[in-house]
Structure formats: C-alpha cells, structure tokens
Amino acid sequence: MRLARIVGAVVALLMTVTTGQALVSPADAQAKPRHHIRELRGAEVGHTNTFYIEGRVPTFPKGRIKVLRNVAGGHYQVWKKTRTTKKGKFRTPIVQAGRKKTCFKVQVPASATYRKTTSRVIGCIESG
Image (tube, rainbow, N blue to C red; front, side):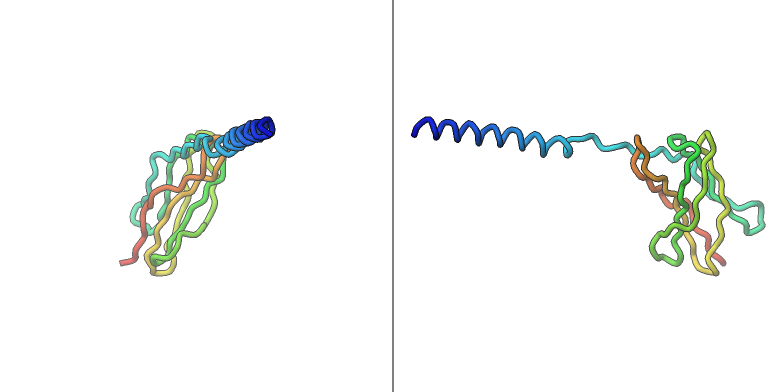
C-alpha cells in the first residue's frame, strides 16, 4: 500500500514537471522586433496640389508595403500597395478623398525576422 502511494506521487510529480515545461516554452519565446521605418514624410510637388509620401524600410527590401488611408476620422483601411526598392526606399502619390480630411500611414507586413509594423500618421490633406 505504501509503495503504491509513493509510485503515484512520483508519477504525478513527473507529469507536473513535463507539462509545465511544455506550456512555458511557447510563451517564453522571444517576440520579433518591429521593422525599421525611416525618413518617412509626405510632401507636395511644388504648388500643384499633387501629393506624395516617401520613406525607407531597410528591413524590407523589394517588398510590398501597404498605404493606409483614413477619411474624415474613420478607420484606417488599406488604400493602395506599393513596392520598395532593393535598398528599401519607396515613393508613391496620394490623393485626397473628395473634400474631406484624409490622413495616411504605412504598414509593413511581417517577415520571418520582423513582426508587422504600422507607422505613425505621416500627414493629412485638408482642403481649405
């Protein structure tokens, strides 16, 4: 009787230790770093009412990034996609939605090394 209790206690102890390690391993995994979005800016070509955004994502060369647009304080939605060069640079034209305030962000998708990264607000176009 005493031997059965000892064996049961040892088996319970082993199960506790092995299941605890199995549950800790994925949660202990290091989180991926964010992409590096540099030199991000929006500007107008002269005084022509033609706008563009440009920047550099050195951690995502020759990749497709998304331009997110927010119209009149709504949610940011994917508006267009553009490619980066082999150095990670991009430049794409943007336009205002009607006569409403329109703001823009850039989103870089996750890769094997980096996680999905969304930039700060680059700028807004307002008619006025």
